[in-house]
Length: 455
Image (tube, rainbow, N blue to C red):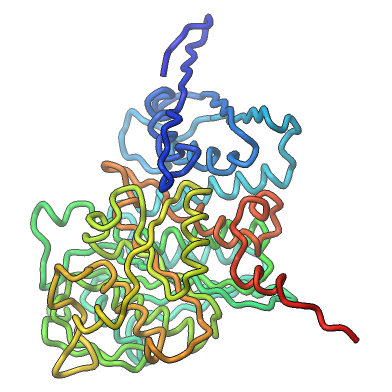
């Protein structure tokens, strides 16, 4: 970028590199946040002008939003500033519609909310705090219903995963479900988020260098909550549920210890051999609830699940695991379109699920061989509580997103998640902008190809 003075203003002009491989977003959205942050500073008002093709307005807009985090405790910084973002689209000079502006606003707010929740330290964002935030968001959305199970009620209802992880914490664990049920919906979609508000590792405790930053272990739930709010505000035509699996993985007299056996909501038993493999336990309960109680057709779970994710797909791409090849292709496309990039990992339960073999229970919660596709194994553990058997026919489509590394850059949260969700499911949105850029979903494509019956 270059800096020029157009008295009395300073103007920075940045040109993003045109170098792009087939696995990265064409907008270079992953560089926009850094470019805006460096050139606009952290205080004062400002203007951002984005020159791009019309189809890239959404990705560029949400990328700019990432450069303006909400949370700070620096006494010399303020987040109360006015930033004007303008778009110049040479290929289509028509101005953005009110609907487009509403979509961009709701999406930007979702990304900043996600980052705020993730950035807040544990003493400011506990299980109580995120439950309160979810209830406030639900109350602000007309027609949205909320179900909350907390503490001992989780145990009594059979949520052995969430309760077992969070039972030692000062603030009780929770399953929080926000439900949007519009008239004439034909599909039911559940988004499940891992909400570990702090992860000490439990009795399999993390190291002094491995524990800092574990406030970010709620990144999946933060993205699901914020993405749900944006989707409903923009307008969503199908049944949509946000399932937040909330707990703090603490050490104490009531904490789970290795060798304990818990019964999850799926009815399956799990022998604990690693208390630091807790995210899959809470999500196991979440996806089972999505199937048994919500009767979901499509289940997506999002989590800062494994350290192996960064080794597997890097710091910019989340790892994607799914039982559906068409949905895998759609998710990859949605990631490239939105800037929240994903890349597929191996889906081979016949090769990998054996890593959880237990002599005492249906499965252990951590793998025997850490060199055997760890990231895939962790996802398969969650799927095992959604499906009765991986090799029995099912109509449920399952998408698992492990975003442990894309959730942050340095010490700041990126707001990863909502843009991917809104784009992937954009065909179910009332927003013309999202409908236009989203992938053609497998179910909709199949329906369009079916021959019409004649009388």
